[in-house]
Length: 453
Image (cartoon, rainbow, N blue to C red; front, side):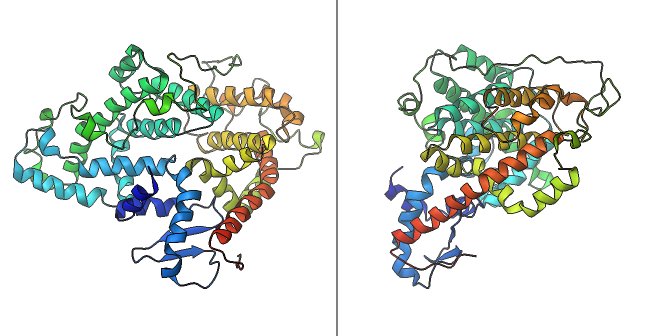
């Protein structure tokens, strides 16, 4: 996309809605909201200004400093999918009369015209318990994989896609026909995933969209909509349906930072063998010895004082910073790219490992045994390979190796403590990152004064 195309998109309220959400994420030091009357809301407000004098400069700054990450983020993927669901003509895809199609069109506009409406669609997919929400999650994850220019990050996301959506044993695996299509294709990895994605988007548009629309219509229309008339096969007019939804396959094969490989020969992460005792109670906190394997009783032996209440107090105190780190992945990694720019390997490892632990913490009670073991294996690999680069890992490695993740009732204290050390390591770097962004913003506007909260 070029700058002129971006400016044309600014008249699309749905696009601006998603862009404003991105521009307001806490990872950024200078947050901006674009208003409809060619004005802005700034946080912090950098100077006294006349909107008409700076509109073009601000839009250029957004294009140069925010859009490269925005177009690789989940929010932009959500915009493209929402735009598709809003504009697709169900009259052409199903055997329904024109009057009913008009009513369906009205419901589409009411339920997909704003960004906030998309969550209702996702909630509907989740309530059906039929895998619809996994289709949406796959598209978002694939978008971030295809747009990722960093090889290590791309490999990490690829492994997540395979484990979550293409592994038959996963609770979020795709339908069988999609997995078969992936194996059948003789293309690059990206090409095979794009073919699968077309099936996924067709399923969302032709199977789930009509059902969602019906749930929002009056009950007396339920007999008028024949679901059997909607094909489950991929949409025929893919050139129309998938325009701007996924770029051409060749775009990925020719990326300088991504290999043009024809098979799944990306390096696999080594797996540390884990003994699974299926006869043990799930998430029991009592080990074989009758002692909690995640107990904090060993604190005194290591001169470590960080209890559960200390963890809660620290995370409450640093809530904005925590939310900022969480939003970095959601925002396609502007802070991570900043650390990569300055070749800060320790900072990158701290951020990646903190995120790894945070995902386990957030899903600790809801993960299945398979997911818990997979997360723990990945954490162990990171700890063993980067023992001296991640703060706290060297001192606690033996404890981490002895953890029986299936028997713990709560998130292990060892991980809570390491997360705190990582946040302390990252905080100054993050302050430098947001100040660099604000100063760069002021330089572009040729201003010399700012007011920081």
